[in-house]
Image (cartoon, rainbow, N blue to C red; front, side, top):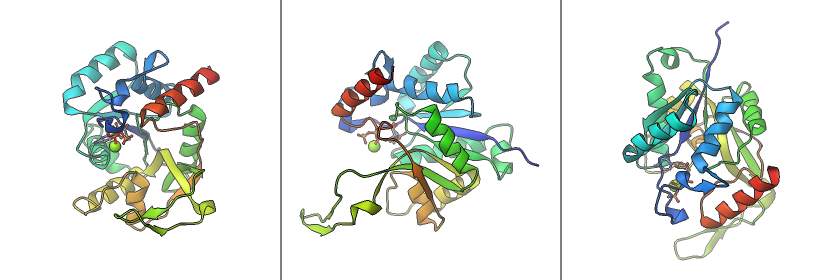
Length: 240
Ligand code: CTP
Ligand code: MG
């Protein structure tokens, strides 16, 4: 039987516009460590991924290399450069895996790839394990949580066009996990289409493949705006 590997891609090549800080938000301090250090540490500690690829801004490559050498010199964490949108950064990570010298990622069609936003620093090993287990069963899996707010679709003039029933709505999180070759092929298919995909499952859905949602956690928030940082700090302190 062919043995499968699981890679993790951590997109960290944003600018953090909504955080309104003067640096990429992944460097911001969360209870004594940077957001990116918290996130990476959980993945390194899980021991499940080979390799872990962080996707970083071109002008932060040096900073990331120094950070890894100082904070986690033993870990198998690789770096590649990001693109304009998150979708482009993930694509670069997938492409980077295909160029690794072992040839593993272009030849093995059972390998899995997990994608996790650097900005979700409160992810737990438990959630990672659950998504990995589901990834062995389904080709595309995401964590999701039932939305708390009522969600409305609104037109460009600010008028409501639709209110989907809340019981059917899920807020989507990362990690998400995929058959590597399926995700890479679907990413290649949507290059150039007039739509920006904010998550990788969206690309799989667009290409007509099923996506399984399993329960995430309200604690696994994406640190996006300044108040998220306050909430994240409080949750982390409570969890010790
Ligand atoms: N990301 C990326 N490459 C981009 C844009 C985003 O790798 N071109 C990463 C971010 O670093 C983040 C994750 O994708 O870890 C989720 O994106 P988001 O929370 O939107 O982060 P930013 O794009 O940095 O924030 P903003 O949209 O407020 O500018
Ligand atoms: Mg963004």
